[in-house]
Image (cartoon, rainbow, N blue to C red; front, side, top):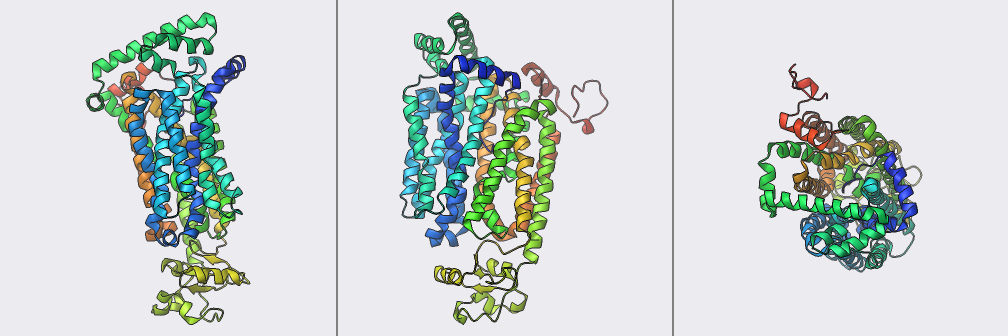
Length: 575
């Protein structure tokens, strides 16, 4: 999973979840209805990867301007930052239910705007609306599920939201592939998100508000009536008492540290335990994004085209593999994270990511060096159709396909053999269509390469390395690393760092590939990952199996990994 938290649930909790929801289906109805927000979250963050290929074909300015492609992709992330920023206030002021309904409206409005867009800026506007919905859903859906479910199965039910996020991303790739043959391609891809948003809106109208929120609003009887539908009659009084104590403790903490955002942030930063927790929490969140995961999720088909697969349908089909592996990896993480620990899993995951990125960089470098040469004697096109930069080059005989693409031109592959010399042409729609009319393949983002399939395999290995470790564990660490009274503000600051890092990566990826090439860009990510690996090793302690008080004591003492310690008896944890 790329953003949004998952509360860890063990096998016993999943078994108990199955038994409880079988006896009380209403609980699962609550969880799945709210969980559609997670599905929409995943769908709207993943669908743009395939839709972008067809948007570029319909709007020539998008195809020519890298920054415009990046803005279309990243505007949803910008919207999500804004949505998450005011989503907390909306949750507290109007309740969880109305927040989810509001997110659905934003989803649907954004999807419709994008589906009918007649210009790139309208698509960007729609993406911002969708992002607002994503930001609200990312915090509200798990919160609603958590507050409306029994404590003994809470982790398992909240985990379903995380699975629905990765499931939504996988669904987006399937739908992208399904609409490749339709006349409106990307409009269907982007507009279809309005349907599940409408379904969730209708379902949520018949569901209650969070009992916890109602209790905080002094609507005690309403809260009790909802608990009576969730718990057996003999447990309701105990649950009401537990809810009362929890809310009173929360209000006492708010009174102690202040209820204003600035007061909370100041209080958090003045506490040495929280500061050290933030060092660890923000480190793993930034590391997650700068591992380059969202370059794969947002630009996967484009990366596949970089590898030499010009067909959009082929690029989408191969990208489906990476999305599927990401979904499977989220499930695998639940099995290993309590067995091997958070810290160890992240270190192993990051080391494997670095290895994949370095190898991927080498593969792209070899593909560029062995790109097909330029055929200077192709008589199928007039001389004035040849790439101007190629005609004015001092040594045109040294040019190959990659030189042609770097000059902003298109490469028309040899019809008999793609790996033989082809023609470097000025980039235009007419010349692209003329090339295809001769049953030849037009390349704009990558060159024909015998290394292409290897690059796709490495992308798959990268996802396998990322998903079980750096995909889910950073969110688990952030749910455990802060003292209880500062858990909300600590997790919020770490989440903001995740979204901002996401925005930076998604807004710069294509520009980096243009400036450094695919090999240089993935090499850069490998270098950043190596630096973040060091930070994780030095700053992030193991929290597996520790009580909140034990984590707090460890941070108060100051955590040092084994290699950086002296031989004092005060050390309380091994690396």
